[in-house]
Length: 328
Figure 1 (cartoon, one colour):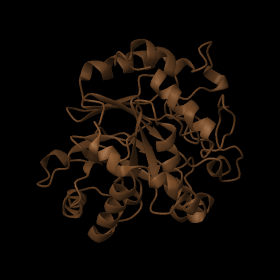
Figure 2: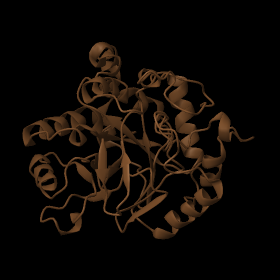
Figure 3: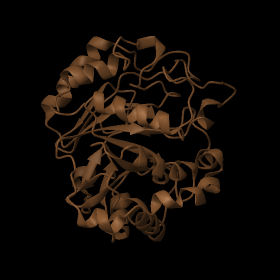
Figure 4: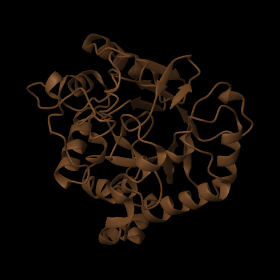
């Protein structure tokens, strides 16, 4: 799905291809494993509320994350749906060892949080979310959901409120969920909303105390209803500033169904992008993406940019010059 961003650059955000909305939100059947994960959902929430709540502080470094594999490896007649060869192979996002490796890699790259694609209650990205939280136990790493439904329709105020309530009750108090000022963070991919009506809908829906970060559009700063933050998702652009809210960088963009990259990979340019992001002082410093392999935006290690550290060129650069001392 195409979109226009305030800096005039075009791009896409879909699971590689992207699947149709119905295909994407039905990855692997969704609800099938929910009952098996109920024990994860019921992890000592009362104890978490009573205990100290160590959370990262601004500026917060986070990466967009995609838990839709192995389903998204096979799309549009391509298997795998990527030009690259991940160092972990064509993995399963529900594999606990893969999750632990991903969290370790992000911490190495000075990334404090993952913004995980979320397509709705009971969908596969939801069923896997407790596994991500569990994988971050006993680490400083945090997770937040990326609310995708707003990018492919206009959910009503009541639907949004129901989803926010669901996220709050199941995940929002988990020790591994990202919170700011005690409020659970929700990023929103509102790509098909070109005006302030989306901000007003989310203002009306958010009666549950979520910390909402909407995607930018032309004129967003003038909207009467303002969320808690704004971000850009435009991985065909090397860097994008929405100061003071966010600063986003991308290593490259080469979608498997396209013959040429929209953004060529250049490690030297990437290092400068990192320096610019750190210097910005923006509240959210965002990496687009950790593992969106179909669009070729991943910083996760691959055979094409592997290094002796085991983490690859792009995470090595984040580790070396990305600031955030004491992380990784």
